[in-house]
Length: 279
Image (cartoon, rainbow, N blue to C red; front, side, top):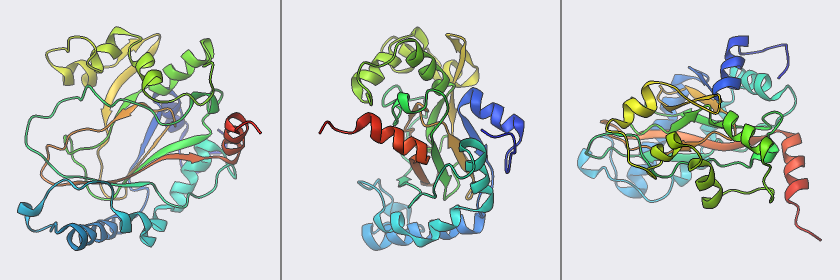
């Protein structure tokens, strides 16, 4: 990360380096976010018969919205401020604008108590690409408002540093390792992580145990953080961020886009060299 910052402050960069994520409020226009939200509702009505003004039609759909994935309005996400964040975290001229801003995720509310999930904690990118610096970003864009307990993705603050520290000490024998066995090995490596992922008796109050305070694991502060925000807000995460889907116990659906990997050109070259199949 260069010394000439464009959109961020030095404290922003320090927060990103320590915790692995950075929240940027109104990174793109709220009006543009609301316009995208209207398009999403229109597709829900046209394709699934789900109407914004008729809660009796609300139900969870299978898969993601398809027209919304291609919506030209998403180009408005890449504002000058967003470009500056990428420049500050990845380096100027180091990255190319993504073709799209990722999955179009809709999560409708369901009844029940909200709690920290024990399953489906994972990360989406291989450690060896990012050992000395992040060569990609994991990006969340808020299309609609997401309130606390409203289905916002949960992230494990500090997890990228812990993953990198462990990978440096014990490099993976097979590059590109991801999936159940790799995730299970990490998530079963410390009592706090074991309790978080339901592999041991759970604390009576999981919210207090995992969200209210940081817990030190091998000199890294870990805490579960719920991603909430308003249309136009964005969260920029280290590509090794451990995260999890969360239940929606709110009063409106969650509308978010998640792009798990915006690679730098160096990251693409390193990926291709590491994972090129033998000729």
